[in-house]
Image (cartoon, rainbow, N blue to C red):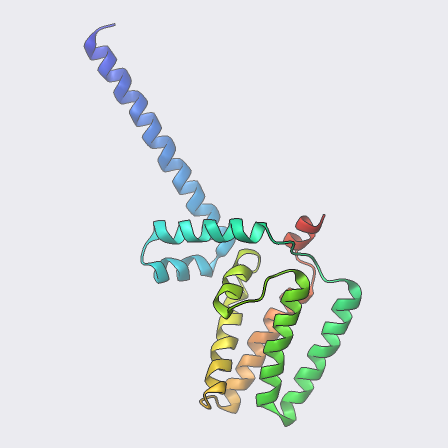
Length: 184
């Protein structure tokens, strides 16, 4: 084989390898965008880099895969639904207490489902793996709760926090496909 043919063969092999790497990265990005939804964009903005964001989300996905996330039992689901109704009823007379109680109830549901409840940010990141569409609700509700603790939340803000928490609660209280897959 001539030197020119050898060089062309090496260039062709290198081109195929580069193309394969680009296709792999594109597919990985596509899967992460689909899985994480709005959280993907938030993480890109937070990290300042698509590559760093994707690395972070990939590590997060691996972390959560090690958890034993499970659906609620029918008894737990009923108990939590009753507790949620009581929290909502409390809002009329005690909006501040209701928001605090709603935040605690969300943490309790997460714990029973198998999420390790530590810092808020870690909880939000963990939830983003299987619940990307409602993690924004969690972040918004929590931000209002923080403002409430600082004495800077109006009753309308607290009402909005309850709506955010209700959306998250509804998602966590029902069986999710991901939890059923992991439990089975």
